[in-house]
Image (cartoon, rainbow, N blue to C red):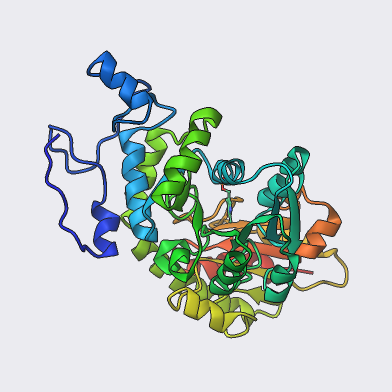
Length: 404
Ligand SMILES: *Cc1c(COP(=O)(O)O)cnc(C)c1O
């Protein structure tokens, strides 16, 4: 490998474009995609040392890959953590974190309005293995504090939440966790390190779905956990080796290249989302708009302080209940009238996507869980992309203006 190390003290914007493993002997400018499941060992002795963890070097594709390592280095630099571990999806990152840090009899505190699959994984699937959990209202700091018990090992928060964009106070939750001898993990999927860096506010672990804004163009599944080198090497790596939540090199390469434009995309898409949110707030068929960038949002000032003054690129709105049709039918009418915006449950794409959370992302929850999370039948989530604002307004108007 030709080794020209980057100078120390580079800014994050530079690291977002430059941080990676060394170039190969060919001097490629764009980071190489290493598609290999195995690695030829220099000697039997070296192989033994590498498998024992006594020497640096790749051993087998499940345990590590240079392209995946480039993604991990770059994301860690952007989040401000010592290290990161790539995973096959956002959910496998959460599974890895829980398997690494929890055992039967341990307790986790989460918010009631976390991502639907997170509630299912922690509240139901891990409960089968004896992991206890309490779900509290996202924005009620006292409720988080009151939920902590002697066996609490982890507080897990997501801010802003999906789909209602509720914002919680990361510094306050870090304080509660640390006073209880527990760790705070933050799902930073919606804000991304372009807007919010949880470790600077005291969080111990940052979890990502790379599938969303990190990729940025809706191409691949990916996930990651950012944390201290000690936690990555001694807690997450052993689970990766036995559990196999491995990030595919091709997916890592796509997301690695996505990180180069993350900051500029998040700024442009946040500005566009704010403009769309302001317009929706004035529409006669819209009951309420949920967006942290709006002064009407209950945690607007906290969000602006915590997210570098930007609201992010996801908003939700509730269509007004009608007289003749069910609220759900009115939401479906609005979605089915769209001809530009994609009816798609993903988010974080340059294409604008809209979805009906109550029947899709949150469809597996019970009605009680859904009500606790505040996901009504009239709610529509919009993940705003980079099309012209006027075309987006016209597309949503197609349905909203023809509601009966
Ligand atoms: C999508 C998402 C996840 C899960 O990520 P996958 O990559 O789909 O597994 C977790 N948290 C939030 C907030 C998400 O939006």
